[in-house]
Image (cartoon, rainbow, N blue to C red; front, side, top):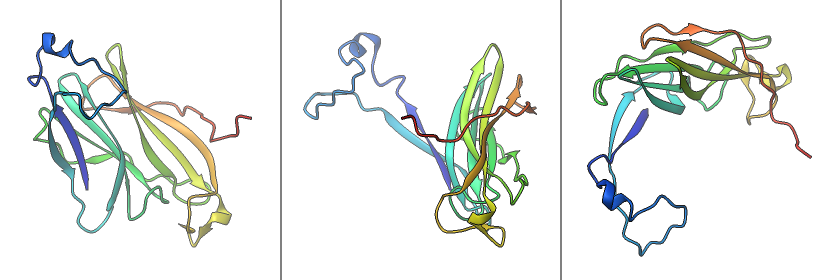
Length: 182
């Protein structure tokens, strides 16, 4: 299941009152702070297949809410994981989720795709998609062996749009996997 919280704080404090409560990372449980009302909405409720959802991101773009998330058949970051997208005019009425990037075959198996966030600039919305596959020695019959090791061909792709209804795939943007810094 995928549930996205939505903070409804616009009426919880006024401008003058907010000056009394600066944003800080120095938490004091005895200091009075405004409490935002939190609402939640289920966007995706799997029944039998594609039951693992995570890496969610949400943004507001050209009058619509846009959400993306990674979606696997059973396990986190497993072979064949895809990225789904749904949009809404309001927080309560979401479109049926559809693959933004569906399962894709790599050299040894299907890739692992992860939703890596949004960025909008000068009228263009970009959704980033992380990707990698498992080396053949970390696979057994096309399925990942226990654990999350053996990544290869780690990279980042981007899907761009200037509307909220027609994303188009952009060229692959190469990124490097984790490496020691010292």
